[in-house]
Length: 316
Image 1 (cartoon, one colour):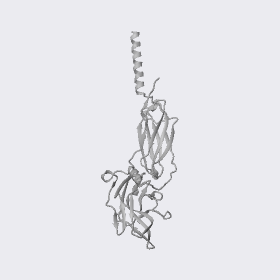
Image 2 (tube, rainbow, N blue to C red):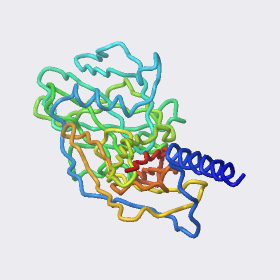
Image 3 (cartoon, rainbow, N blue to C red):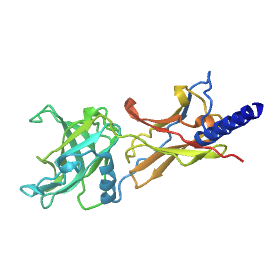
Image 4 (cartoon, one colour):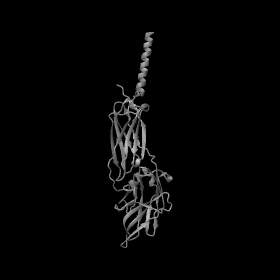
């Protein structure tokens, strides 16, 4: 009788050990505090564009679908009035707050006209006739532009002859509206200018894109590095990236010995990729927990993404 009970007890212990090794389930710990890991903003250099094709291609990743789901719709080009012509490759653009948008543009002026400055105007979306346009960009830095646009609009220079393309960073929903071009220069030794009629309609929606969280294979007792990449490829304000860990069962916990690092990768002169890494030693209690990466852009525009952690156990 005793021998039989002993055999049954040994079998039960073996089964429990097998389940523990298979699932690697840690015991729930109480009284643990929330951990929030932040990477501060870093300085960035705002340079001019060298290759329009690369910029336009990169910017499409920050523009959501429009007509034909391409993020833009084409218009007949060029549009000419007398000897003044403008080529706008898009008629409509849809973008998201916190990111950027590129308005590709080139122009041609009358013979003898010497271009000195390029100016961009914005009309409110509610104004059908654009009776009160506001200046949002001027190549003369001493000229005042509409408050709120200072430092957010850059001209993409020296790419093609008579290039007038601009990039608008740190987008806000209030940036929605129509944009049109004016050139200022000299004709027959007199100051002259020409305002082009065609406009590009820009619609800025709330931020929907999520950060990308990359998680490698996690093994108990070994160091691991998680990577979070912010959406968009713009060179506007550097976003803040914050890590938050929530333990199994919903308890908020602190990952001891963690280290965060911030990285900015320059893709072109005016496009960048921002990311943050979180390095820590994987433990059994991290199994079935959730890690959240939060991106905070300028003007309190935020987005976040979460992923579950699976920790593999090693027994010697």
